[in-house]
Image 1: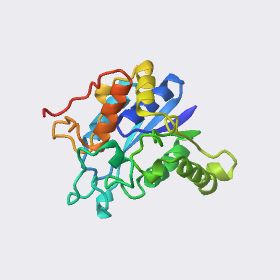
Image 2: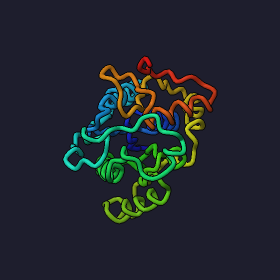
Image 3: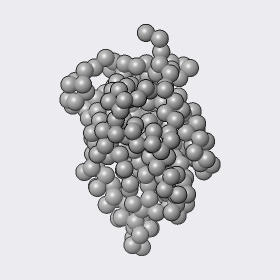
Image 4: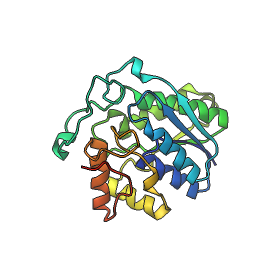
Length: 228
């Protein structure tokens, strides 16, 4: 089967890519350089793709900084640090990038049609999702309908399927699965505000969820963190 995998270079997308490779899929990986302050994830995506032998890897340049509205794309907005689990569980955080997954999936649909792919695999998660509205099962179901209505494949009766194998898993379960698949999480980057050399801050929401996941999985995070 031919599939498109949305590959950010983070922990979740690396796990999804590994699962697709292990399942024997022919993979077209798709990453985005969208003006994100954590641009180090592009290098991580390249490392992960190379480690799994994926040679069809498209890095698409779009600039979501023209809209702003997120601490990940607007230098005037601060990335939150040292938030409690309770605080992270309330509301939509400032690191939400307006309509990002909708934009990414639209591009992925286009690539899937060109490549003749039957599915798009993505690493969205509704358990440890930090309040992002475009990481919910309801969102996924709605965009599946878009894939059916808005593409040639859909009109012809074979719509591209959206596959989100992590959507109901905890971060610890994702890590356990990834380790069983052979994922080297040291290649990945999850941090929202890493140092110039790629070392993770250890205190943003993404780092906090990642470190909590590794602890609950009974494993040690191999990523590099800045010295405290």
